[in-house]
Image 1 (cartoon, one colour):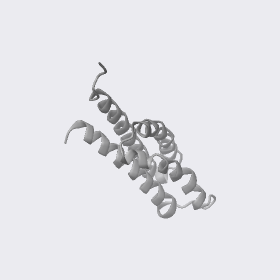
Image 2 (tube, one colour):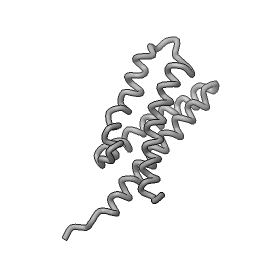
Image 3 (cartoon, rainbow, N blue to C red):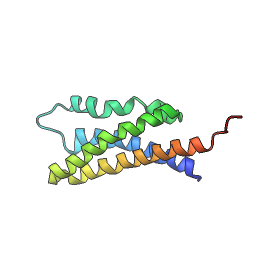
Image 4 (cartoon, rainbow, N blue to C red):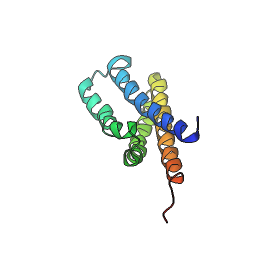
Length: 120
């Protein structure tokens, strides 16, 4: 497995893992008593679904947007990890998946850029 495909798989694993984990977290692991589950799914999982088609087809613009999209989830994970000690593992999981998504997207773009043919 070369570095470019490893970066792509890290990006996809982080992105799809974040979708699955946030859905499971909001529905089964720790549903909120004060916030509707559907609203949480719309605001937390909805933005992750927007670039999914482009990421699956290796569109560079979608990969670039995935870099920006991973940053609020990193902030959410850090906030959850330190604000609620009982749910620290959930916050750290969000941090790990968002970092995996960020690094996979960054290296995927960098390696695809370096393998492009130079103009004449």
